[in-house]
Image 1 (tube, rainbow, N blue to C red):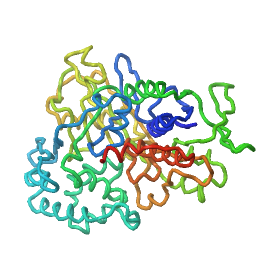
Image 2 (image 1 turned 135 degrees about the vertical axis):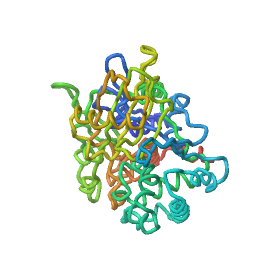
Image 3 (image 1 turned 180 degrees about the vertical axis):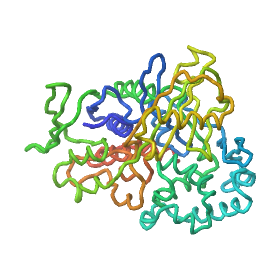
Image 4 (image 1 turned 60 degrees about the horizontal axis):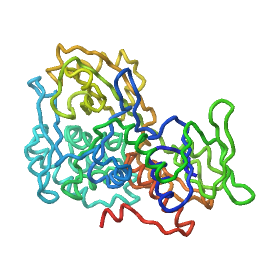
Length: 461
């Protein structure tokens, strides 16, 4: 039995079913996909937030392939990130680009950094030296977990402007934290894997269809085909071990509904606080450490203009509270209904200051910023403006979090943990969620003495 129908739970269920086990998947929501989902707003299909992956995210790409959906979330041919700075003395947005060539690491980014207009010549030189030092770090070194990335950057000559225009530009989006609030171990993992491993490792991919098509519709089809019994609107409320050694799972399914289910093996693939509430006594040596894994919010602003105001598929911003902006006109279905209109999604990570602001206040704050960044938006009509808030979008990658993240096996035979917050070595990403599901399924199959394969190892080979 797999409890939780996010990416971690779907992955674990598919792996266990593929190995020949009878699997039941429980999910309290009326859909699968966890915190990467879609919903309807009028005639539009809206993603709750903008999600991207990189070429180095081999587990998530395996997941998409397993769902027969890889072509629906393609990667860039080569990394190319437009970066608009509205803090330029001229007052006009200044465009720079972070892009790679086909040269080997680290030369693949050399030309881009050498001409990056948002840093001075001296600042660009310090970036190269810091990148070389970062490449020498071992992200698995426990000592790095206690140091914050911002302190390390300052020790290696990075100015406040360099942190803003480069390190935080990438780090906030991938870690959901600024450098000062991020573990050096996790930051080193992100930058070393994404920018310093292979030339194409940081090429960006994103869904060209609603996330619900990938993580719900196609996931359910794959689970059905694999023989997994999927129970939606069914929440696990209790987990105990019966006298026969089997796990007993109490469930709640609607008002007055619910039953007790049994299973030989259970994978808990729910957030850390829900896991803590369900864990039987003795399953972890120190279960309260799960409560020490804090969360971080992500805010998404959705703007529908009456005309096209952005010609790029996305861009990142400097000198503005705006972080990343994506064109969602096609994936939302807007293009089919209004060929002139455009729908932009503004993704704001580490949004502690904005997450509780009223919609009217956010509108007054961000629409003028979009006009500063996009001159074509000045005078354009705003047909719709709405907000989606994920207050607990990810675990917070703060220094010390590494020692709090548990591995898949527990002290209780037949009970395993999954979730992006578990000890995958990755920050809270779709990649981490899928890897955790693979880890939990692999540990469960090993515990049962069942042969199994690791798709990541095969992909690496």
